[in-house]
Length: 615
Image (cartoon, rainbow, N blue to C red; front, side, top):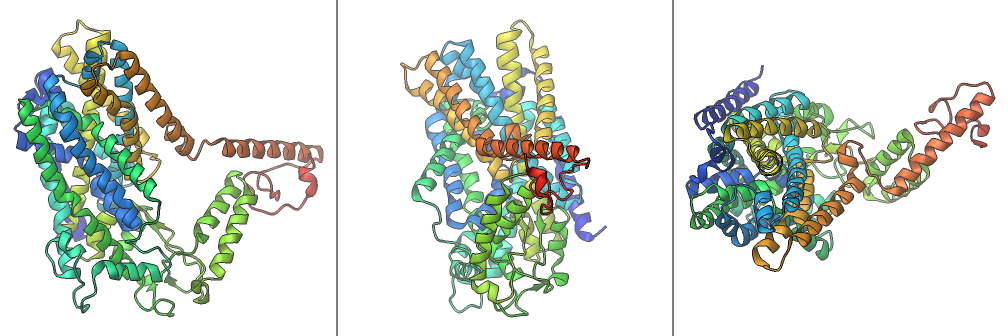
């Protein structure tokens, strides 16, 4: 076992022991402590816990990765999530605390005098929260699979077990104090490597200043100018330039803001303070704690991208010796290749790795291979591949003998976790980052699971189905509901539809379209009635789910798009396959999807017998 592995196990193990100790010492004894921590959390501590609850795996692991790869356009996530919290703090938190309820569905049910509205709110909350938890499970699996060298599935199960113990035992009281410890861990884990790397690249100890500063020993070359120059020379769009339309960025930012303000697990945190005044104060402190990470993220993303480019492009672009020798690639690349989140392919056989924009050639070739394998529209895919190949042949990179981007997989979610390794920081810093990533995912997962549990045990069972149960029974049902929610979230997390921030964005969309409008209208519009609230929540939830199923597959179980054009192609491919089978049967030959029939689904061999498809 390497020194890094030993250090990582010690650091992560120590944080787990701390979380479990806090959970045991803060075990909830009644429903008030289980749901809202007895409404006795100090505003500063609650602000810290809110920060940990809010800064999930998407913030810690994925956001800087999106900024690293997306540049300017990815700042929509930064602005949307931060702005959304401001919206929540100013418009919702104090008013919801004033109502004095335990949960969001309870507020909606009482405000609109409708059990049906409460039930619809429960459904919206569970769907949004489960989707969000899937993103956290992806983050847990990524961190475990790399730093503890465990399979993604095993890491996910370990994370589920840890959450189960401290969330089920402690309830909101235990989760709150655990999240305070997790905030300390994750903020140190995020900022310490950023400080080291900022000093290394720019000489500035504050990453926020280093981002706009000059590179050390570069005679006045700014970091962002250098990054722009590097990526443009390799065919990518300038890092600081806007790629999408302003309207798209505005709408994405707005939807993320509204979704943030509608997240039930964050809203519930403002029910845990003693007074309405404390809710306002708590929101302000939470914004301070959140800002520490969110103002650091742009620097982490830019510096990670520059370090990655410099690792692969070691010399002059196009020079025979200008790229990293594959066999000499650094250990961090070997480590991440084992997880399947980083990969390369030597397409031109020169023994070196080329990382550049190949005009979509690699993506088109991958789409063609997928169409051939899965029975898609091979003709269209082949046409796109030919078009991309023609564009690439006209580029300067073809003149270098390059045959496509050879970094075939660079998952966004690895950028923050790999950054200390890329910069060759000490082992204890790398181990701290691992502990921080896991803490971020666990803290948010616990808050979400608690929101799901309380909506089932308190809003559904206690308030609607079994009104006569006592507190002890309700507490038991709450713990059982949380256990079931953990199992379901873990199962769905085994096959996430995208990287952590993508999945979280889907949850934000669900919250924005269903929960947020009902809460806002319920607080500020006296004429709003139950029929409007119910119809609005159902319309928002239904339309957003339709979008998700349309582009991401049904409940993430059937991967890929469910769009009619793809369904038609699949049906057409099935009919061709059936016709070919009958033709082969008539001729006395056994038919297989890959026995030489190039037009049948799954075939990779050109057709040799035209009679195969005469039907």
